[in-house]
Amino acid sequence: MITSFDIKNFGPLSSVQGENLGKLNLVIGGNSSGKTFLLKALYAMIRSQEETGKGEDPRDFVEVLSDKLFWTFQADKLGDLVQKGVGNRLSASVTMQNNCTLAYEFGPDTSRKVSPLHNNLPRREANSIFLPPKEVLTLSKVILKSGLQDKAFGFDATYVDLVLALQNPTQRGRNYDAFSRSRQQLENMFHGKIEYLADAEKWIYKKGNSRFSVNTTAEGIKKIAILDTLLGNRFLSPDSVVFIDEPESALHPMAISQLLDIIDQLSETGIQFFLASHSYFVVKKLYLIALSQKKHLPVLMADQQGNWHQEDLLNGIPDNEIINESIRLFDQELEVSLG
Figure (cartoon, helix red, strand yellow):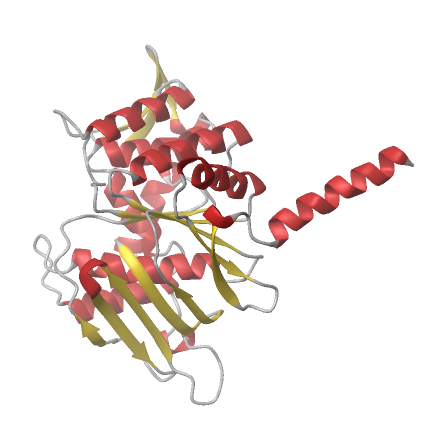
């Protein structure tokens, strides 16, 4: 599990630190505050450690990390990611359990190669994943062609990694009990299953004895099905780290609440979650989870000036623009109704 991180001068992120992180972690802030950037920066570091030395990939860690950063952020050169300013250097570090740390830094002249300053993270057998706001099933062929064949900018490495992970076949046999329960709950939410037909190279939605093209399936169903698939094909395991950008996307409030209950259940198995959101329902539901279970639930917040600080939802919902706007609308409704 990631216990802390420190990132400076990384794109829109001037300085952001996370400490005493938990199984569930929330990131909130306005548009362009860097929420997605932060999740992708953490993902690139952890996933690079996981990919190094796996299968027949001959690359060493320096090559894997450099490639992951380049194809995740898709700048002409990595130095373009360094926040503008005289003498600025980008630095990033992440610490996991047992105080093992990966750290790197580079300046604006860096082209493609990044060498870590320090890395004593142990080899990771688990797989981590980044889930974007939109589903990827309908675009899977296009994503793979763009990212793997054409080597063109467009769909970044998080999309390519996700499509490849989803194409792993569903594993037969007993799964983790919590995973099996979560899969059943996910499938109950959309009354069916999403399956990949390897021979036809396409996804379908199965509801009872009927089959439907994934292209005509609702966006919310496909989004829920992605998590279901990653549990069913055993890509995710109890030591995985899952980064979810806008878990509320394409879901109605009841589905958001159900999904967060499932995510909370999965976090108890050991999977760590980082959720970036600007939804009142997400903030409120996670607050209720923290309160009802007396659970430490860190929330990292960016203010309108781009400054970041950390609070704990167990101590109450901190002052933030998501909640403030909800209160403002409620006050406006009272003014209108009362004349």
